Each structure stands twice: as structure tokens, then as C-alpha cells.
Amino acid sequence: MSIEERLSVAIRTLAFAQRAAGDEWVRDSGLTRQQAFTLGYIEEHQDRGVIARELSEVSGTTPASVTSLLQGLEERGLITRRASPDDSRVKFVRATAEGSRLVVGFDDAMREAQARVFAPLTEAEQETLLRLLQKTIDGSGIPVMQGPPARRSVDRPGRPRRTG
Image 1 (spheres, rainbow, N blue to C red):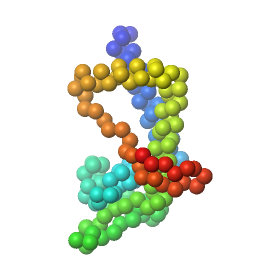
Image 2 (image 1 turned 120 degrees about the horizontal axis):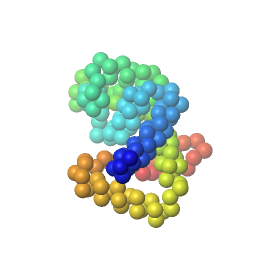
Image 3 (image 1 turned 60 degrees about the vertical axis):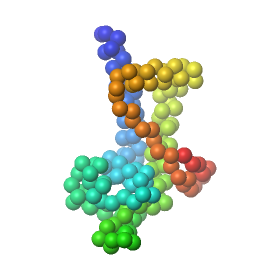
Image 4 (image 1 turned 90 degrees about the vertical axis):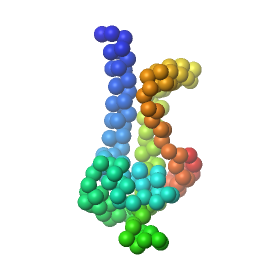
């Protein structure tokens, strides 16, 4: 196997491990993957106002599917829908405190999974790996993905409050 193939296998293995951790959290949360994505998107962008049409566009699903998905999240008490003060036909979607706690729980689970993956490396080795990966990304013209958003502080029983 060539060095490029071995690198590709290693990177895919790490990506699949991250995906598996996310899938495990989704299963444990009782949400579907689509519900989890939607709740996370709403929580991240709600300060500027999220509407169903936007959710349909970013998720690539039909407006009817988004309506059904939002009804399920609303019934579980994870989101609210409120009419716009400027146009009563427009409904803004927001995560409730419980919905935000669930999203923060996902972020925590992902950080814990990342810590397990990189635990065998010293901090210096992690810095070297990051520098090499960044050089690869920069040199290949691959668009840079954004990291997880800084979350607002959310009260979680038994856990300290944190911000971003």
C-alpha cells in the first residue's frame, strides 16, 4: 500500500471514529440524526432568527418534512415557534433551555471522543500533527471547515456553567 493510501486509510479511520461517537450520542438522545442536526442548527443560529424555509434549504429536505420534524421537536419541548413581530406569517424557531442542554451534551460528547482519539499523542505531537494537516489543507485548496460554535452558557445540573 502506498503512503498516500495509508494516509487516506488513517484519516478515514479517524473520521469514522468521530462519526461513530456522534451516532452513539444521537441514539442515546432519542433523536434521529435529522432532528439532532436541526436542533443543533437552530441553537447555533437562533439569535439572528431561524425560519422553517431556511431549515429546508440547509438540510436539503422539503418544507413539509421540516414542518413534521419541527412538530416532533416542539412536542418534546426542545424548540418553540413564535410569530415574527414584523410579519405574523413568519415563525421564528428557537431552542428551549432543554434543547440547548441537549446540544451542549452533544458538544461535550464530541470533545470527550476527540480527547480519547488524541490521548496517545503528547501535546507536542498533537501540535506537529495539526501543523502537518493544516499544511496539507492549505496546499490542496480544500475549503476549511469551521469548528464547533461557541455555545452560550447553559445550566446543566451537576456541571459547572461554561461559555464558548
